[in-house]
Image (tube, rainbow, N blue to C red; front, side):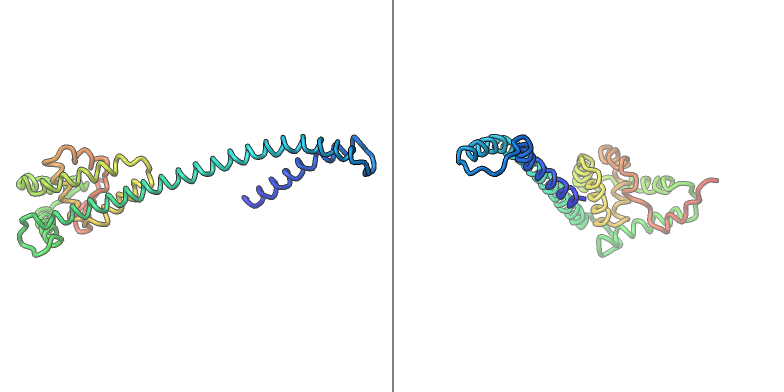
Amino acid sequence: MNVILKIISGIICLIVIALPTIFYVKNFDTPLSGKTEIWGYFGSYVGGIYSSLFGFISVILLVITLKETQKQNRNQTNQSRRDQAISNIVLLTNILKDSFSSIPLVQASTVNESFKWITDNLYRDVKDGCYNHELEIKSWANIRMEKDKGFLEHQMIILKEILKRIENYDEKNTQETLKVLVKGMLTSNQRLWLESYANVWDEDNKKLLSRWPDFAPLEPRLQKLIVPAT
């Protein structure tokens, strides 16, 4: 499509450039003159027409160039903002992950195993029940967090910064990319207990997470316990 437009534009420019000469020849239908003054008149005519025409074309080209430059600068600025947003979210999420190691967890030797151990306990509490919605199972997780005030208190500060930055980013596609990054960097168990702790102890994060409904979907074994009401 761009090639066709360029060809059409070139043809139109050639026609516009040729028109003054065509009009001159048509109106002054004379053979080529051997007199210098006749050529002088023709040169003055052509110069007057084409100088104005080329001046007009130069202005148009300048405007087009400026618009293209502004567009490129705008694209570069947007890309730079996007890259910076991604870099900041990755940095903050890594800080959040590193902070888990300072929590005095028991029954496990690593952070991931520790959060899994807590989820295992949740599963044992709910496995014999019948549930119509995941919120019913998550309510059990909330009850468990009611006993652990201070468990993820410091992590709430970092999580709030992450959630606010994502929510305040004004470009939808990049916002979704940031969410995917966070979900990919944190395990499902970590996200579940961050959400549960926020629901119980941190009103700001609770509100922010309410606008991100798929932040912490239940792991498959817990989802299997849900039987939708008929």
